[in-house]
Image 1 (cartoon, helix red, strand yellow):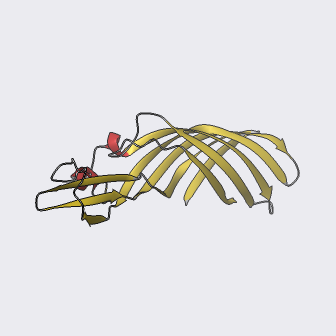
Image 2: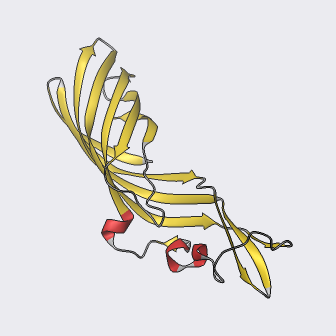
Image 3: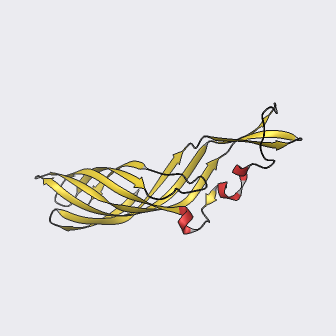
Length: 177
């Protein structure tokens, strides 16, 4: 969901705005821990991120007809993680063979806690280079429907406690006034 504002000059336009999206993925990390009193296994099954996106893009319409137009768009986006959620089910292990792990699981430390992101801005944000192709269709003189697939490639070493690198392919569908 989001808002897009564009400033047009012939076939060229500059777009900015704000968007919100929910991204989830499976890091597939398992950690075994315990002591003589018992051993457990903690599975890191799911990471869910609530993200605010602030894009700036340059768009060029290369083919415009009476009703339909095609365009290329490119630019950059700042993504800020507003909230993070982790799914970490824990289960006891009946066999203690081959367990060489700490007494306390690393995955239960503060950086892996769900909730509003309270870290530094640099830890909760990342930049992407964005490239897209779109088509728009005029419904009437004031209203246009558009569809735009966009590839976003992340810059930097990663984000979050695992330094995850996030590349995305998104599909935007909307109305323009």
